[in-house]
Image (tube, rainbow, N blue to C red; front, side):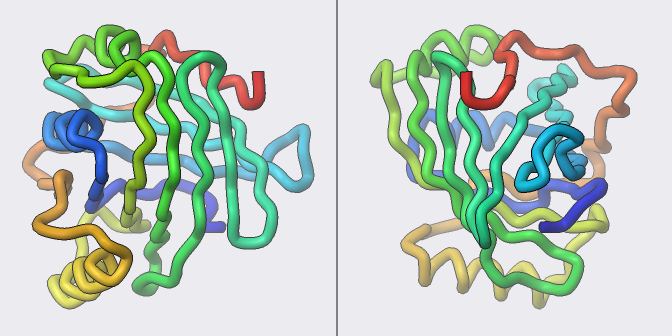
Length: 181
């Protein structure tokens, strides 16, 4: 696990709705730290900038070997697998089930059509300690994505012109990522 602050640099999703969310995302950074309550857990605090609005979320996760999992009451559950990546990078492949997708889209104040209440999706994220990525690392990640069944261009590529939100300027969203509740 890569602790401390990481920048979300590149992302793919198999869900059209979630891909639309990624396309509206301007930036995201995560701070991963050991859980103060669970020796096998971690806490992820992340701040996303969507349509100029900064939203922060905290999620408790459980880690076993190279797999992490979290669930959010009445919204979604995810299983993350840590994959090899470039130096200073964290590559996550996620299987997620989202319940009440329309509610989540409304809470995030996004104008996205939702085709189903429940969505099962796979996502692939590349995070890095730095806010920039070497071209060669980007190309390697795209090849890795292709091998994992993700096609085309990523739905999210961080552009440093967008900047990142500070912790103090974010609004805590109403999803309440409290772990397995």
